[in-house]
Structures are given as C-alpha cells and as structure tokens.
Image (cartoon, rainbow, N blue to C red; front, side, top):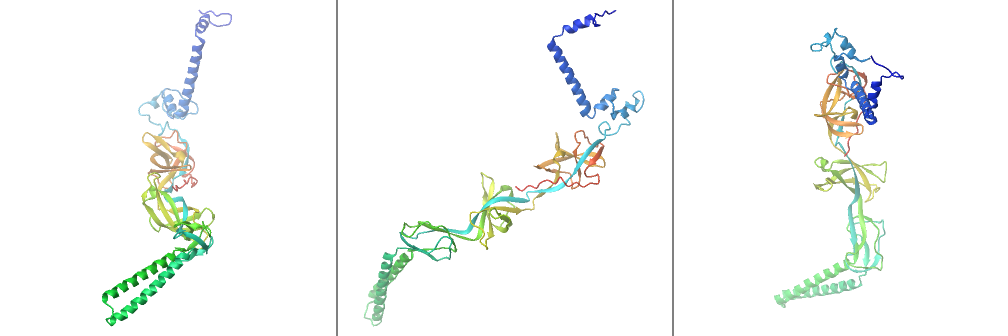
Length: 420
C-alpha cells in the first residue's frame, strides 16, 4: 500500500528526484530532446524508416507502409520474401521535376584583346651630323618613299662635290688625250695605265662627294603618314637623331595572345572578326598573318598576329581591338546544375524513363552558372530529374510534375558556351 502526502505525491518518488543534481537533470532532458528530434528526422528523411517501423508493427499515420502492413493477417504479409510490396523505397511514389538534356560546345569560340600596329612603321633619323636647315613636311602629311623631308646645312659638302667634279673632268680629259697619243705610239703603255688609274680615282672621289651631299637630305624610306616631328630648324643633329615616325597604316596588324589549348587549332589565313573598341558597332574582318613558334612559359599563351585592311583610314596604330575566332570545338551533353549528385563512384544524374528513375554516371567536363557539361550516356532531349532527387533509388516509381515527359519541351536550361 502506498501513502500520498498532502500534495498527492508519493514521498519516495519525490525523494528520489530531489536527489538528482540539477545539472545532470538538465543534461538528461537535452539528450531526450536530441533523441526525439533525431527519431523524427529519421522517420521523415529516411525512405526505409516507415517500412522498418512497419516490420515491428508500428504504423504511422498517412504512411505508405499502412498498405504494406495490412497485407495478410497476424504478420503473415511480412513473412517470407516480402511478397506484395511495391518496388522502390518502401513503395513510395515520389514527385519530381525534370529538365531536358541539350548539347553545348566548348572551345569553339575564342575572344581576346589585342593591340593594333601599322603594317610598316619607321623612325626616321638624321643620316649624318649637322645643323637642320629646313623641314619640308608637317605632322599628318602623307609622303612617298624617297621623298625629301628636310635638309641639313650642306655648304661644305657642295664645295667638296664641285671640287671632285672638276677633278673628275680634268682626269677624264687627260685620259682621253693620252689614249689618242697611245694610238700614235707617242705614249708608253705604262704611262697610259697611270693616267687611267688617276681618272678612276677621280671618279670615285666624285661619287663619295655626291653621297656626302645626298646625306644632307632627310628622306622618307616608306610610304606613310608623318607623325610628330621631334626637331626644329636650327637644331644641331648628330647622326641617327630621331626626327619623326612614319606609319604605313594601309593595313593594321593586331597582336593578341591565345591560351595554349588553341595552339594546334590556329593556322595561317584563318578568318578573324575584329571590333575596334574606339569604334563601337563597326565589324571588321581579317585573317591570321603570323603565329609564333613557341608558347610563353609564364603565361602559357601563344602570340598570334592578325591583319585587317584599313582602306578608309579609320583605324590608327595603337588602338585596342576585340578579336573573335571560331573553331569546331567539342560537344557535350549539358544538364541542369541541380541535377548533379555525387557518390563514391563519382558524379551522376537521375533520368526519368517510363515513370521510373534511373541512375546515369556523368563525369563533369565544365561547370557554368546555368548548366553543367558532362560525359555520360545521355542524348539530347533526355529527361534529367532536377528536383525531388534526395530520396530516389534505382528503379523507383516517380510522378512527373513538370518537364520533358509531360508533353512539354523545356529549353530554358541551355548552358552558356565557353569562350576561353
């Protein structure tokens, strides 16, 4: 017989609980709460939980296991090999959303930024030392090859040329006179040879004086436009002093760098599309004119040169250009990023076929923000499950809510194509 105190509580029980330290009691309560939460999570998120409980005679409300537990009587339906149970995880039918597989290409487009240079560019320097007497061109003028652009003081050179010209004329006259006398045997052969040598020396001295006089002129070596002039008349110029720069911009050469993976794909005369950043909206075309013979070891890039015509003279050397090139590239199936799952074997996706879920291994090739390119047994149009995939198993029965297979052709999952 148990006796209760005035509060209706058995004295022995109160005494027992009063002996438990408060800290230990708090820890016991926390452990109890954790166990309850873990059990609820196991029931909600583990597909086989309902079946396991049903095997022990515990049937949860609204559980698909109710039908399983109801088969047979007295547990007869649970005996043997589990006859009468649907396939999949505990016979549950899951709802999923699918996305179509599309084909996408990588390494099929190259975009690079390059700098333009004139097809010919020459820095014109003074051919010799002296005072600049006059300039015959101004910045922006178009000159021809061989055109005189300026002159140095040539007073001494003109005098030397005149003297050399007189000496050459006198030597020629003496040679002609001695040649006439030699016909009459009045001049020995040795004397005639001496006169001939003197005439030849006079001719060479005349040519030297003429060259020195010509070097007092500053001449353009190519056709092109004159740049800023670095000197002024009256300045003393030493030999090779820079006077100006001449640019032949009838064609523009664009230097740009490409990743080494394109090294074997680029060849001479390949077409390129060019856009001048300073001239938006204008599309230009050209061809590859040069390819370097080695890859830069530090940047792992290859230098390429493209040539574009500049007949309208709208482009200037030094401009920056956007260069685009197209290649055959490689095609891979592309799937929704949400469809990718991982296992010990690697990445995989679930496909929807005839109301069933099937696992397909899918090796990732390239990730984009809106699509993942993969290698796997996938073809364009295949329905890949992108939502409701956490509780799927091989061959599980699923209900399609949206996507391919529901008489819809979603094309909103086309991934971006790589251009590097």
